[in-house]
Structure formats: C-alpha cells, structure tokens
Amino acid sequence: MKLEGSDWFYSKEVKKHFLKPEKFLKSEREIKDFDGYGKVGNMKCGDMMEFWIKIKNDKIIDVRWKTFGCASAIASTSMLAKMLTEKGGMNLQQALTLTGTDIMKRLGGLPAIKIHCSVLGDQALRAAIKNYLEKNKRTDIVIETIKEHEEH
Amino acid sequence: MKTIYLDYGSTTPVRSEVLKESLPYFSKIYGNPSSFHSTGLVAKKEMESARKKIAKILNSEENEIIFTGSGTESINLAIKGIALHELMKGKKGHFITQKTEHDAILETMKWVEKLGFEVTYINVDENGIVKLDELEKAIREDTLLVSIMYANNEVGTIQPIKKIAEIVHTHGKLLHTDACQGAEYLSINTKELDVDLMTINGSKIYAFKGSGVLFKKKNIKIEPLIHGGHQEKNLRSGTENIPAIIALASALEIAKKEKKKESKRLTKLRNYMIKRIEKEIEEVKINGDRKNRLPNNVNVSFYGVEGESILLRLNEEGIRASTGSACSSQSLEPSHVLLAMGLSHELAHGSIRFTLGKTTTKKEIDYTVNKLKKIIPFLRTISSAWNKKEE
Image (cartoon, rainbow over all chains, first blue to last red; front, side, top):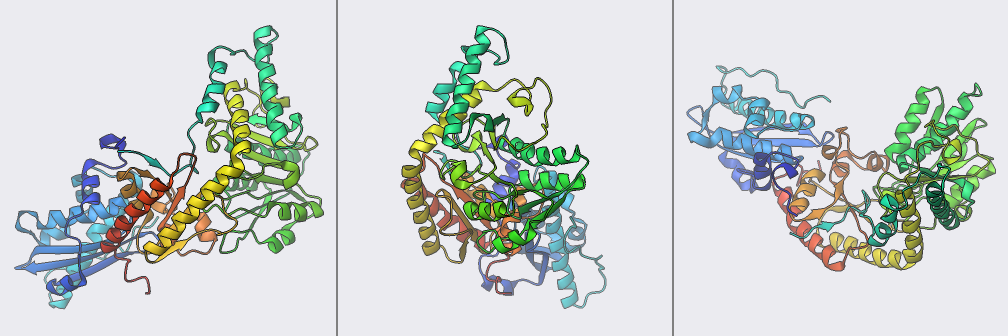
C-alpha cells in the first residue's frame, strides 16, 4: 500500500518539496555566483540552514540553500526558494517582510510541533540579505535582529 | 508497492497460528471467568490453562502470573504497586533504574519521585551496558526495587541481567526487568535470570496489542492500581481479556519453540545488514553493543543527515523503520538512549532503527541497503551539516 494524501504525515505540498526539493546547492562551485550568505540554526536542535542569494537591482534573482533537518525543514526551505524566485524574483524590501507563516501557508500548513522549522527559513534569508547589505556597505535598509533559533 | 516492514521493535503483526487459536474466544467461548455458571467456568478453565502454560515457560508458579493490559501497565503495577505499598505503611523509600530504560519506566519513576520517593538513575557505557559498579554503590538500606531492562528497544543492547541479579540479591533487594523486547529471542526463565519481577507484553511477540504479563514472586507485596471486581488475586480488577490471554500463551509457546532457530537466522541477517551498511555507505556509526545485542536490531547513525528525512524517504520506497531523531518525537529532544550512550546531538538526530522479524528476508535487506545508498548521499548533498562535521 502506497501512502498518499491524508495517509502521509504532511501536506501534499510538503511532500512534493521534500521529495523533489528546488534550488538546493548542488556544488560548492556555485557559491561564487552569489552575493549574500546566511546561516542559522544549530545541530543540537537538529535544524541548520544555509542560504545564498543573488541580487540584481535590489531584486533577488536567484537563490541556493542547504538544510540539515526533518522533512518540513527541507520542504520549507525549498518552498521559500520558490517563493523568492518565481515571477522573476522578489525585491529586497518585500523579501524582508516574508514570515514563517507565509511559507507555511504556501506549504498547506505544518503540524504545530514543526512550525519552528519553517520559521528558520525566513531567518536564514534575513541573514543572507544582511550579509549582502553589509558587504555592499548599504545602510538604507535596516534589518532587525535575526533569531538564531526558536527557543523550545 | 510491497511493504518492507523493518519495525518489529515497535510492534509485530499477530501470528496466524496465534490468531487462529484465539478466535473462538471472541464469540464462542465468551464467558466471564467470574460467572457462577458453566459458560463462565469454561472460560475460566481456558484462562487458567493459558496461565499454566505461561508459568511453565517462565519457570514460575501460576499464582505469580498477573495479566494486565500492556507492558506499560505491568511496569506501572510493579513500580507504583511497590511504592504505594510502602506509602500505605506511612513509609517512603528508594528506587534504582538506569538511563536508557523505556519511557514506561522513566516516566513512572518520575511520578513516584513526585510522591516523595527517591530514584537513582545509573549511567551506561558507550554500548549501552549498565555500569555495574555504579549500580552496586547506589543500593541503599531503603532501596525498594531495582529495575533494569533486559534488552533495549532502541539499540538492542542486552543487559547482564544475571550479574545484576547477583548484585541486587547480595544486598537483599528486589529486581524487576522489562523484558518486552527480549521475550521473543532470549530466555525468559525467571529462575535462570533470577529476577523477582518481570514485564512482558503481547504487542512485541506476535500476540495482541493491549495485553501484558507481570511476573511477580508471590511473596512480594504490592498495591493494585485498578480496583474493582477482585480479578487477578485482587491485583488487577476488570473482566479478563481472554482472547488476548490465550494469544499470549500461544505466542510465548511458539517463541520458545522457535527461539533458537529464529535467533540464529536473524542474527545472520542482522550482521549481514550491518556489514553492508558499514562497507557501502561512508561515515556511519553502528549504535549499541555489537555482541550483546538483540538478534533483530540494527541501529545506525548517518553523519550529516537527519533521521526523519531518512525515515520518510524510506517510507516512500515502501520501507518502514524508526528514528531516534527529535523530529519524529513530541519532545523535540533526540533519543535519550543515544544521548545516555554519549552520542552527540547530531548523531542522535541522524539515527535509524531497523528491527527485523519473522517475515524479513535477505532480499528485503538488500533492497533496503540499496535504497539507503541512494537516499543518504542525496540528503547529504542538500545538508548544511555534511562536509562540515569536522567543525
């Protein structure tokens, strides 16, 4: 018997992104093409994410990521990558307003206990944008503190 | 897709012979053993016959077998029963257990701590074996019970129960062992093991879920947890679950008969699986004692990947296993067993347990290892913890 739909532990969308993740970093050689890098999470909690962003005219035109974590952590990072790059890319200001809840909505929801994983995705993105702004000595956009990890 | 069930440590299906033997007790021999008429008497006789069979296998007396509703209940009855017996005399006391026990033990111990009893949790070595010197030192004048599991459910490590019994009894104390995982493959002769109390359940030995046995030497005084119609010598009230009891006796008899041969077969398969994983996948760690290990347990940590992701990808290939990762638990903490054995959080998060059983074949093991050889490298590719484990 193949488990599908409601027989699975997560939504269809989570399953799709978990089994066929989009825009993950395939090789270290790709890194040089990206302009900002962020990393959040820790091994103790079991979730760690890295995010790379490519910027053109204040727009995120491409991203790569790497995630150590459960299915929802992998799926939420993959979904975030999709959200940022679909429709020709998202501008920085808009990207900074993205929240874990936005990612979760696109994933069709997550079990309550898993929510901290998707919150991590937007924090990794913020860290990458911060890194890009600092490298380019930009002070026009201010980023609030990045949560390293949800406390639990 | 064919299901490859490698999670027999979680639960077993009911054996067809066992099911067949218990079926008449649902609607043909349905009497209440407490009834004062022939229909009840027949049921009672059958129940007592099952008790006799189990007592024989355990090398105990019939009045030392208490039927319960699960392994968890047997454990609760043993620990709380002893604690409450002391409490009703106006006394308290001390319990000893160890850190890799099942939650049924650990949570019950936490509860008696709330009642004012003291509990010592003994450490284990890197293979999960209890530190015997620490155990001996922990025994006190007021120690009421020492509870050490027979074999660990996660890593399969078998504890030196006979040696533990010797230590405990030298000090004149009582020993309980949780034998839920061991009952199918190891000797459960209580005289040979020299235990005073022992827990067995149906759901791990191809009998029913929701059935258990507590072996308790007859001179040990405990308070019941469930009060009512005085069943089970007033230690566990409630109309007896006859089909489940028949199933327990049947399953234990079959297990006894097949133990030697099946243990040998599974040990071979287990070693084959471990050997292939270690040889064909880089950066893995086999958890648990390699020698003193349940014949059906393979527990392995994969560096740089998280257990739940492995588990769900295996699931997609039809393979059922379990993980010590926090992500599959309700606690967000990885396996307390692996942490107690000194594993890092990373390795505990990346652990997968395969537990083999009666339908497991070499072909299934090969299929599983072949899938792992694809799943692990892929998850490592997308992992932020791979290549960086030296940090």
